[in-house]
Image (cartoon, rainbow, N blue to C red; front, side):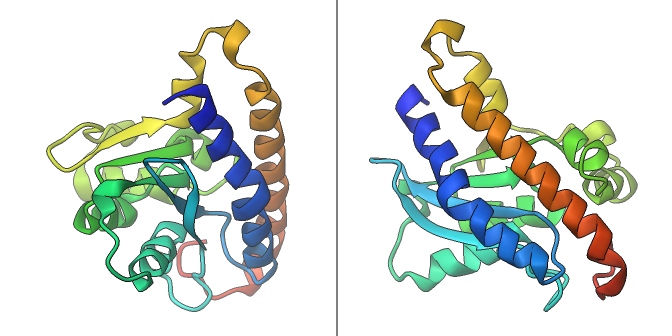
Length: 193
C-alpha cells in the first residue's frame, strides 16, 4: 500500500474507529474494532466495534461484517478489511467466510496479550488449534493478511511523513482505552474478560 493509503487508514482510526470504540468501552466492551475501505479510493465504507456485553460473539470484526452486509450488493473483492487488533480465530473464520481477499491489522497478538492484557486470542489458537505464538498461515487460498505497522516500516523513513506521529497517537489512545476496560471488566458479563 502507498503512503496515501496508510494515511487514509490511520486517519480513519483517529476520526471514526477510536471515537466509536471509546463509546463501546464506556459500556463495558473490549477495545476491539474494525472497518472496511474501498480498494479504489481508500474511503471508509463501514465500521464496527466490540459489543460483547450484548453477545460474546459480537467481536469488533463480527460487528463490522454485519454492518457491511447490511449495505446491499457490495462485493467484498472491491474492499479491504482493517482491524484494530490481529483477529482471533472466530474473526479469522468470519473474514474468510465473508470473502475479503485482504485484511490488515494494527496491533499484533503479542500486543493484545501483553500491552492490553487480553491473552485469549493466543490462548485459544494454542489450546484449540495447536497454533503456537499465533503463527497461522497469513497468506492462503482465501486471503492475505498484513500488519499495518510492518508494512509502514517498509517505507523509507524519509518518506513516512507524519505516519509515525499518527501511530504514536493511535497507540496511546488504545492504551488509555485498555486501562478503562481493565478497570470496568469486573462488572460486565463477558465470559472471557
